[in-house]
Length: 238
Image (tube, helix red, strand yellow):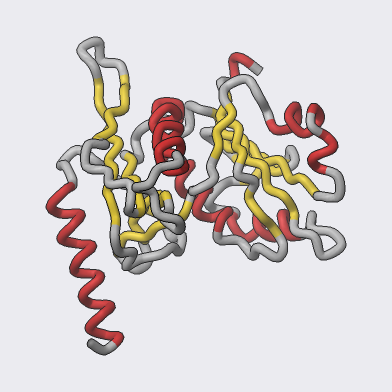
């Protein structure tokens, strides 16, 4: 089978899998970030936006079809504020990394989104994402564990509903993506990439978070690397 036919086959397979498993009330993030496609051997996980009898927002994760010896592709409704998906992501992280004869090395966790440029689904890895919430902010963490950050160049990002702070400089994300990447790259020193430490107001929508996450993990890794520990915070508790 030539490369063109292989690409067509995997694109068709993705479409069939998504069509057969998706629900009408899930809305995936849409943005122009790149990502992987054509990943084989997957379990698809859906985290839906729901409201309870009182009208309160809740998340609902469908996890019964997860097979340990596969990649987990996690589809999350873009309308959910991130605070509602913390426990779901923690559960997935623990299951993915649990020592088991069924887990196979090299299997990943992926966030999905719709690529607005190529009109197809893309995936970004989040294997090592660890959420510290809601009491820490990255500046407090770096100060408390200063020895861990000797010789690195931390850049503190704070994603809010109306702006993105990068070392306290405010940017309009995503409108100022070029300015943001240039600012981040300028903080790299001595051929050591900047260490990006992400804080997220936990009222922010998953759509906005997914856009920023994909943007950061696709930056030039020789100049900037996203720290696996992240800080999803309740602004009332800082």
